Length: 244
Image 1 (cartoon, rainbow, N blue to C red):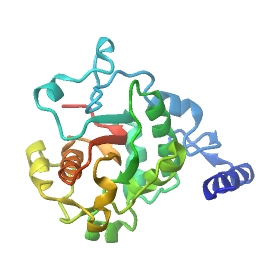
Image 2: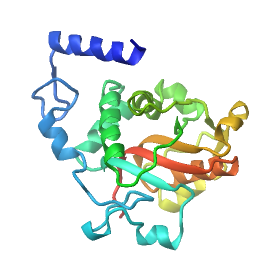
Image 3: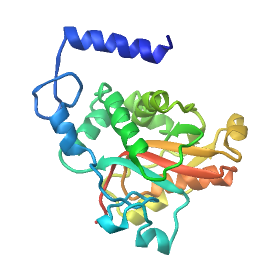
Image 4: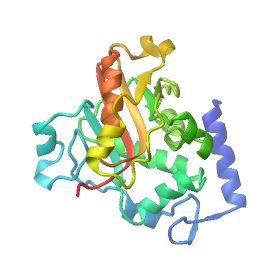
């Protein structure tokens, strides 16, 4: 038995002994989020742009939105499990800033279901998380994108390379700044690790993150991967912020 099934079996025994409460409604649950709350939070057939995952009208499902047609981003596709709105945003904030790492496997399971349900989505050959800069990683103690990517890798059966890319600049926090400031912040922010170049060339890379807001971070990372030879880049994000 591999490590992941063993961990799942142990987690199941612990849940039976120590039942938990839903992180949202507080009711009894056998997962961090109870089934009724999860049904309300996760996309249920929401039509989204196949490239950037912004919401579309039902008739436009699996098509590209006007913004992507007018100026195609560096990434080729995006799958999002849900919209970044209340109360889903509170789960992300607890994972990202509150050390609630038990939420990461639930996010991965939810994202896994969204990936399998995405029409026409081609699975990547290799996964990597959006990297944190050394200062931010030291302050937080973990990379929430990597915490989601680990169980997602096991669920999809796709190899994960945690150090495929590096953030060479400790960019300012992207929350609370304008779209243009976000774009400027991300210029030259990433590089492919020198010992990972062979794993990038000619391959379809899946980039995992917790939230996609303006898309500038993911666009900059996709542009870097393609500059170093990636054939295709797809984003796998737990939550997508709606356009303003």
